Length: 304
Image (cartoon, rainbow, N blue to C red):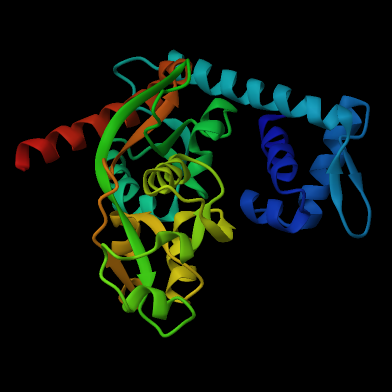
């Protein structure tokens, strides 16, 4: 087996869909299928259960995920350690962040890094920011942008990228919430009568729970949402109110369709940073990205 086959396997194990996995790997679905069959032949057992409608991992396939991840990570670490200071830095790194973070933090980081290290391949996956830490811990990503939790998990390193303020937003359109929102001042508002759009997990959900506890009510949840960007969209449609970071609202195409409540929810600032498993920072490529992020943050502090 070769490293490309391991990458193809992991893409299919993640998506469980030949079409999506082949797109991620930039190959055709038939080519992906042949590569997986060759891998299974070499392993000596099926790694996937296939039928006309679905793909799933066998028990051996689930175990093989750990082997494939460990093998690729060890190979990349070995390649990085073999580079001398005189050599041009090369290799690759996988980063994970939300769509908003790709605009507000990763863009500057990638621009600075690519200018200095043009031979490094940077792979970016976007998704729910609440999954950043778990993706790094599971080594699905080398580095990720995450909201800093109250306590960092053991073995996870963190460096600050910036801060954001949490805002309570409500729809501007006429909707079932309008009478409750518009008929009273903010101090008279009965928060318990409103419907809420709530993140499925993460720091943002914890902060909303804290606000509800402070106001002494249990929120009526209209929807649980994965990803901060979708929260703004649902609020703009009049389905509920929500707590979102100002950086998410500023980037949203729906920002004109919501209003901001001037709430007092205690400490409404959140800290956003870059995270990685400490062991992954032994890789020169990951370490170079880490130091570039720190330099950008320090430059911003000096300029402000």
